[in-house]
Image 1 (tube, rainbow, N blue to C red):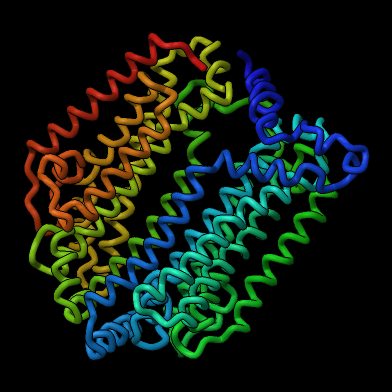
Image 2 (cartoon, rainbow, N blue to C red):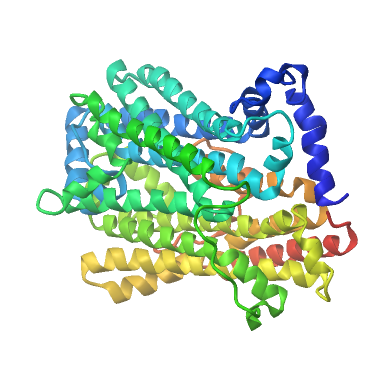
Length: 565
């Protein structure tokens, strides 16, 4: 079936029929000219399409914040221990860059410091991806044009996308306001923290709605919105790290900082919530005005004219794969550089931070695999770098599935390019990109730590080796995606991400829950050396490399025999 046939069948058939878009309720002449006709049906359809991703996102945010409150209560049962932690966190510029400022030393204040801003980032990411998915992505794919041929108002798709994004944000807000008091936190502060996180998500909902009107492609729209989120993080980070003697006012320009400026659990300032709500209102109003000024399928920002002739880079599938994925890799590299440089800089004072809690020291010692606390912390960072790099590698490999389902693979394969060569082009980008990310993580961590200790050259070399040691494990998870894409393409996306999630869960919680070593061995990172401070042996590297190679070969063999599309 052609792509147009699939879209038509999916939307005009069971998809919208099930949602009742073409039902008698919308057939009246009174609704035909209404700008919001069909909003309810489109919203229900969008929620149904995201019925797995949205609840999972809500659970992750709520569990992270509530779990942090519970953990702090266990790790720091005394006021003296909490005061020492607060003093360390407030006195370390790198920690202020990562987590923000501290207002008080209560369990609630520490929870806000540790996860308030990051929960706001997660809520913003949910909003950005949901809004762009149900506006610009559907418009780019031609689905909104097909929907618009029914009795649907011009504003209905945008309203439905906004309602779909607001739904998980409201769920996070309500659940946090209810769950946090059960951990022993005051109800008023819990409500303020929940509302701050939710309001931050609403602010970026408005920003994403504007971005979807500016660009003609979903990728560019996501890039604009994510770029705004990155700028907000940097403004807040620089302002918070600067302290009283620097440009601390920069933090006020960031919606992320407004969560901490509302001061949950520390003389709450309710008026601060008006700032993100104003951004949301202005963004939504601007999005509707911009939508009225453009044509369907077009963006307000002019597209750059292409070259008269394609560059030699696009003469083969490898150049095309690089062109398609270079933007995403650049974003990952930038995020890695900032995050791991700040995390490495925080290592200088990590002994003081962990000294406030023996339980916290044991936890990082477990993750890092050795007793020396600084080495354990750095090794835990490299484990995190490997896990996140595996997520990048998986997403890069799964671009093959996106190219196939969108019908673009058929165009490439209609030339002299074979299936294996086409698949290897994206796999090569995944392998090379993963190596680059790990190298950036090692160099950035080494610089961050080395510049503060006066041994930058030594630390960069040491951390670069520690980061590259995670490469075989990261690629082994990417090879699972290749295997599923070749043999079971329909299960490639959920199966590959399940493998990544399982590895993350095993590494973070496996030893804490004292699961069997057979379960721990499922994760390839269990077999990676914990560097720096650990011992690198050749056997695990060899076996992980052979497993990744075998999975990839089996996947490519299956790709040669199965149908495309």
